[in-house]
Amino acid sequence: MRLFGEIGIGYEGMMRQSLSHFMSKGRTASPTSEIPLPIQVLSVPHSSMMTVEDLLRSNVQLRATTLSVMNRHHYGELYVNYLKARHAVFIVAKRWKLPEVDGMEYDQYDTPEARWVVVHEYGEVLAGLRMTPTTSRCGAHSYMIRDAQLGLLKGLPLDPLYFEAPVADQIWEGTRMFVSDKIPASRRVKIQTLLMMQMAETARSLEVTQMIGIVPVVFRRWLKRIDMQAVAVGPAFEIGGDWSQAAMMRIG
Image: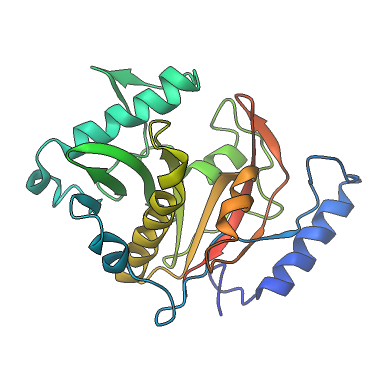
């Protein structure tokens, strides 16, 4: 398995590398779990898991759609509604200072290179996330974690990773992941599962083998219910009152 360009490194090797880097900075363990312990995030075996179609079969109007610049005109107002849902979550609810216009949230990573995974029902956006190649370039920007590491983003730490941010065709970044607060507890796990499975199917279609992203630490509670694996690859840190951590995720 090849992870970082020409560097061949497995998950155990990544853990040793991350821990060594962590200790070399003189850091000590804390209640926020800065030491990179394994966390269950994503590894989707092709044959053994329920498919997206299986999840949708019992919910006729529930949909999981991957949008791109090339196909989004086929889906009416779905892309606009997705950006409005991001506005409701990140600007209204979380009070993050982000670009906005006409009730939509957007940023410099919403480019033609991106893909937007959306779970929706009767036209209402229930959940979503954005996928961006780590090889992306748009002016001075590349992708979010790398730009944070380069000091280009205010509000994110300069050391979100224990190593240099990877740049490789087979590694993409996941950002702006959310599930609407309107979703009742009885449906949240199903919606979350559908979102992650649609992301995995999209990654496979793009020949992506690894996803990297900053996820809430609390995601470990429900991701363990799904057959998904990864490793934490950065320290826990606080963004707007939420504790988050970078994770590298393998697409099976």
